[in-house]
Image (tube, rainbow, N blue to C red; front, top):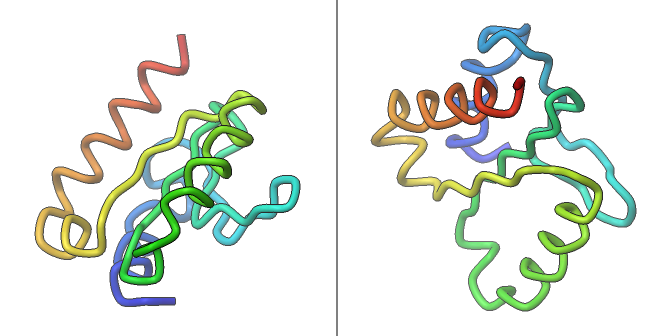
Length: 99
């Protein structure tokens, strides 16, 4: 895993945000960086590998949203430099989707 994904995984694994995330979870023909089945949340950490793949990413998001998932995208830089803010946004999304 890239450093940003490693950092994020250390903060969200083992139900640290109150829900269970899996990493590299297959959903259909796609693989989510981090996914929670209940509530249905996907967290994507987008690095340089996503440059030039906007159409693919858009189709992927559309498919995952059609399956009921809320998708949160963060850049590597956001995760590495603003980790607390990223975690707060994930936590707020979890709380909003619980009800």
